Image (cartoon, rainbow, N blue to C red; front, side, top):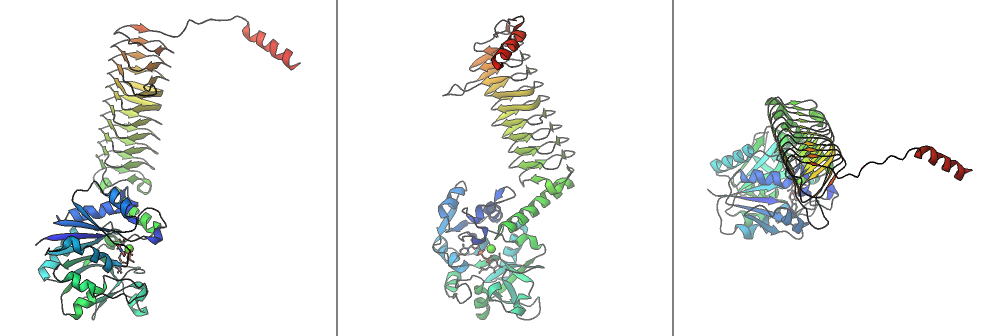
Length: 466
Ligand code: UD1
Ligand code: CA
């Protein structure tokens, strides 16, 4: 049987107090709706439709890279039942099961969704609801059963519309459902807006189906964190915390030392090898991979980068979109970015920035340097204060440095320029022309000493003051 997915994401998210659509707020580094789209994909659906409304264009643009997503616009937003109705045109003529997800419920597991679909189809239900028993059900719709807990579900009542005794119910509606497509939209059309908010509530469908004698199943999750909805920034932080805790627990179980899991910010897409040590206050983001036996010191931020084995990154270094081979040492206070490629055993020290640069195996740049658009060979020594002048005001130009070259401190390499293998450059040089292999290049002027100059200057100063 076909499965179709509809994701509700049209609401304003008033409680976020944000100009950004709620579902684009990031949970552990990724917009919350991306977590939901990943859940949807795990079902291999025939179609996935996103209901947008508030800030619809921003949301569509943010999701443009997803192939095959359909969008429908709900304007104005008159409740979750009304939202589902706007998707009717996208599903016309289809049969099978519709799985309804909420753009603001990012932690649902693929296993739970599969359990929902299986239960729904094996029971031949008209609707199935994911529920959870929680300690603090405040704000959620409550599951009202016809008798004792475990009896069939009778209806769902929203928090605002519930009686005092209904509010005592600790079983809540997750807002995640499976529906038989047949007859669904006609039934949804019969929902009335007779409630505190004057909105069309999708959960009212449960009572309608039950009154008609149709089967409504429930699937209860054992871990209620899975169905946490995000309505405020406090909930956003709480849910992000859950994701991070899961991630650090998973990494520690696989042999990574995380000195202080409470201050490790490690995105879901990050992988780390065994015996790597992560110090407090480290951010590892995006699709970063880190090898085995590495040490990442406090204050380091690494984004979308590949780090080999036995690499040490000292404090407060920032590495984005770079590759570091095995046995590299970086920092403290280094900045590596934009397709930088550091080869095995190379060393980068403090206040060194590399951009779009290859630093060859065993090469060193230990202090105060800018190396941009450069290809640097093996075993090259880059002296303190070396700068590639890669930008001439219109274009970025290349610097090429051969194996074994020695670049003296405070050298400016005015690109495009080449330094041959084994060449030496004297300190303080401005290199505008290529240097042949094995040559020494010096460009600083000859030194001049003026004897007695200091005493004379002081004498002049006294006369001026007097
Ligand atoms: C909803 C459920 C509640 C459940 C809770 C679980 C209803 C009436 N209530 O409440 O039973 O316990 O989720 O988290 O459904 N949306 C639209 N268009 C609209 C209104 C909402 O697309 O007109 C979207 C929102 O963007 C959001 C989702 O539907 O992604 C849920 O809406 P929200 O207003 O957050 O519902 P809750 O009050 O959380
Ligand atoms: Ca919600």
